[in-house]
Length: 173
Image (cartoon, rainbow, N blue to C red; front, side, top):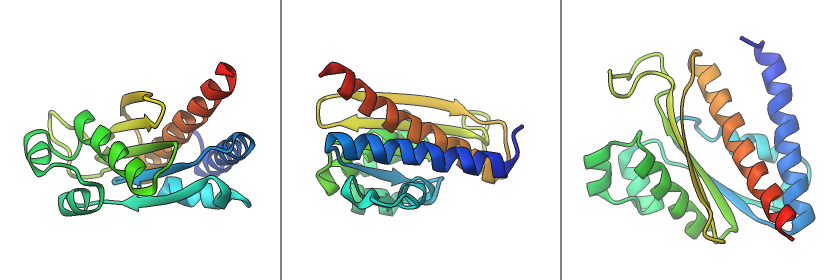
């Protein structure tokens, strides 16, 4: 397992790539975060000039916050649980609409050390990217780390998804 300091440097470098790519293309983004507690937004705002492309984050840790802030359907939360692909997709769509951005990424999961179940173990994370261009991409990960590591690995994956979306937009031109 890589050292946390190395991972922190990698995360800031990846955030810088996202900010540069979005700035160069005039794109905007936002995040909806549950288990990461705003870490992705924090990383993006570590980069000078991020305000040109990063419009905001919604840290929606509770069911109630997911419903009230992001418009996630209470029935969906009840049926699937907060840690599900369907809720991640609803969170991404909700935050994209809330901030009126080109793309949004959402993260929901079980960071640990407790809270896991046989169906939803510690380290399980669902991420979803929702683009105004119709792009929808979901990912399911089960991280093998402690709470901090799981949050950092989730943030890295979310940033990679944002970077990948910007690259696909650039390459399509």
